[in-house]
Length: 214
Image 1 (spheres, rainbow, N blue to C red):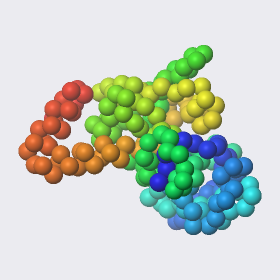
Image 2: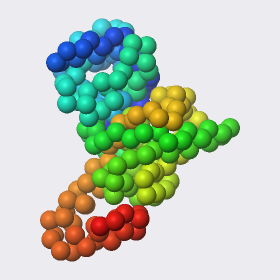
Image 3: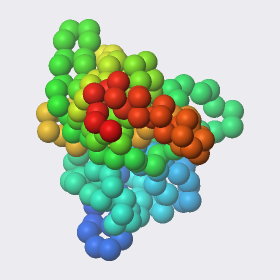
Image 4: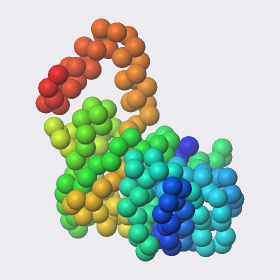
């Protein structure tokens, strides 16, 4: 389990192709106290550590993970967001993040001003249906608050600290990002769906309020 609070920006050392890809990342903070078998959130994807030393961490990446997330497009030298799994005694910032990517989104706009940045992310209706203003969304492993939800995209605000300490400051229009829906929203949606007609009506009404067709 993670919180969406990125610990550091790592750099891809190398990634090998093949049925099971091997991703090696250079980092300074995250290797400390990490051992093989531990879970690390890499750009929003929960990966298992297979090897580690003082400055490197290596992961095996399955084909499905490379397809579902943007890890398959990574190249040597690219930055990635890293977060170690939440410890029992850790403070809980952000929100509950599983590291299981639901879909990829595309950066529509990255409007950076002096003290503010707004990211507009195009996303599938299957993602937008779960979003509400002031709700949570995970973008490339970063816990963010939704500002508004439109018919084909949503936007979030990013403070200067987050821009500096995550990869979001590098994102340009057209860049693909990993999205994870708030886990609590999924459970509520599933509960309503299992209620039969009531859940179906409420879901349809919500989709209509976003401008979607039935």
